[in-house]
Length: 294
Length: 339
Ligand SMILES: Nc1ncnc2c1ncn2[C@@H]1O[C@H](COP(=O)(O)OP(=O)(O)OP(=O)(O)O)[C@@H](O)[C@H]1O
Ligand SMILES: [Mg+2]
Image (cartoon, rainbow over all chains, first blue to last red; front, side, top):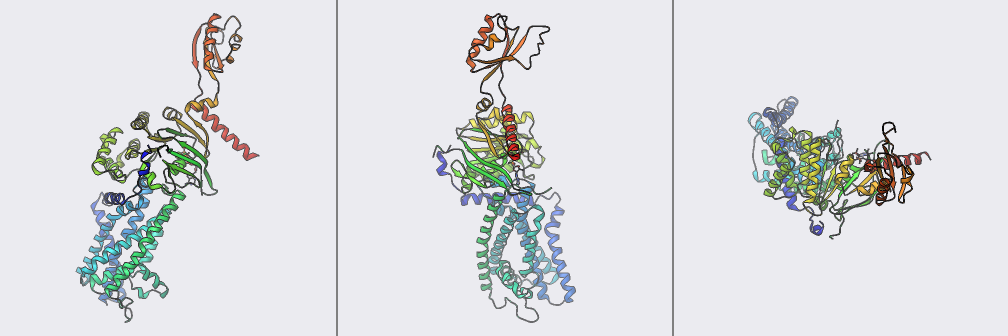
C-alpha cells in the first residue's frame, strides 16, 4: 500500500480552490434554507434597515434635523457595517454550527482540504446577502432621506474588493478564536465586532474618540475602507466636528487607498497566522469535535 | 518505503486537562499495525479507544509519544495523512441536514479531490452498496439513525483510504444492518491488497469475527495483543474437552482416563446433570497437554467398554479473556492505590 507513499501530496492550491467552491454551495444551501421566504426577507433586509433607521431617527431627534452631511455619514456607515456583521457572524456561526449542530467539522478536518478554504467558501453566501442589505439601506437613504449619491466607481470597486477582503481576514481571526470557545461564549467575538464598529468610524467620526484609541482606529483596515467607501459613494469622507477639519481630510483618495492596502496587507498574514495557531490549539485541547451545547 | 507500517505508535500518551483533575486517557500505547490487517481495539467504556483514534486521525495531539500513519507523522504531516485515511464514528447524529444524501456525499468527494464525474459515479456506487438507493435524494435530516450511520460509512469509503478508522461503527444499527456493515468492511478490505482497518468495539463477537489481531485496552493501556486465537490461549494454555459417556469405564473409572499419558486432569464436568439416578451417563472435563492426546483418550474409553456419546472442545471465549484481563487490571490498580 505504501509504494505510493513518496508521492502522496500535501494540500495543493487546486484542493483549496475546489473546497472553497464546494463549500460555497453548502453555505448557500444553509443560508437560503428558510422554509418561509417572508422570514428570509425580514432577516436579510428588514433587520439591517431597521437598525439604520433607528440611528437616523436618534440622530434627527438629537440634532433637530440639521446637517445632511452627517446624515449621509451615518447611513453609509451603518449600511456598510452589514458586511462586517454578516461576514464575521457568518464565519463564527459556521464554526459553531458545523462543530456542534451538524457534527461534521471533524469529518471536514480529516479530509485533505483543510478547514480554511472550506470556511471561506461557507461564508460567501453570507457576504452576498450582506451586500444586498448594503444596497437596500443605501437605496432607502437615497429615496427617502435625501442621501446624495455621487458614485466614483474607480474608487468604489477597488475599495470594496480590498475592504471585503480585510473584513474576511478579521472574520477568519474571529472564527479561529471561536474554535476555542464554548457555545455560550459566542458573544465574545460579537463584542469585538461591536467594538470595531465603534472605533472604525461607522456611526461617529474617529475624531470623537479619545486620543489613545486613534492608533487602534488607524490600524484597522475597516476604518480606511469606510472612509474610502464614503468618498466613493457620496463624494466626501467623514466630516470634521465643531468646525474642525476631519481627521482624514488631509489625505487624498490615493493615500486613503494606500492605507487601506497597507493595513489589509498586514491584517491578512496576521489573521492567517492566528488561525493556524488557533487550529493547533484546538487540536491540542481536543476542541475540533467538541459539543458544548445542551 | 513499501515496508512502512500502516500504523506505528510508540509511547503515546494523552492527558486531558479537566476539572477537578487531569484525566489520563492514554498511558503509553505502543502499537504496530501491518498494511492489510483488520485490527481491533477492544475495551470497556472510557478505556481510551476513541482518544487513540482521534490522535491517529490527526484530530487530537498526543501529550507525548510518536505516531505515524503509513510513515507520516500525525503531528506534523497531517495533510498527507488526511489523503490516505478516513474515519467513521458510530452512535452520533451527524450530517448536514439540509443537503440530500447525494449532495452531502458529493461535497465530500470534492474535499477528497475526486474529479467531478468520478465523484458522482463513486457517490452513486456507495449509495448502492450501503443500501440507501431509495433515500438518495432525501434530505439528510429525514434519515433514521441507522440510515445516517450508513451514509457516514459511505463517506468513509469515498477516498478509498489506505487506513480506515471505525469507532464503534455498528452502534445503533439493527442486527441486519450491523451484519451488512461488517460484511461491507470485509468486502472493501478484500477488494484491494493493503487496505487496513482499525476498529473499536465493545462487541466481542464483532472483534472476533472481523479482526486479524486484537488489542485489549483498559485505562489507557494495552493489556494484551494478539490474534483472537492467541488471546484465548493466553487465558488457557491447555486444551479442554467435554466428554460425555454412557457410563464410566468399568475398569478403573475416571482414573483410567486421568492416568493416560498426555492427560493433565479428568474430572466430572460442572454441568453434569446426569445425577446418576436414571442413567449412568456421565460428563467429564478432560484437560489435555495437547490436542493430540485426544486419540488415546477416545481409544482407552472404547477399550474399557464405555460408549462416547458426546465430545466437544470447550474453548475460552474472547469474553473470558476480556473479563480476566480487565478484571485483573482493575484489581491491580486498586491494590496499588491502597498500598
Ligand atoms: N475532552 C475530554 N476532556 C476530558 N476528559 C476526556 C475528554 N475526552 C475523553 N476524556 C476521558 O478520557 C478517557 C478516555 O475516553 P475515550 O473516549 O477515549 O474512551 P473510549 O474507550 O472511547 O470509551 P467508550 O467505549 O465509552 O467510547 C475517559 O475517561 C474520558 O472521560
Ligand atoms: Mg469511544
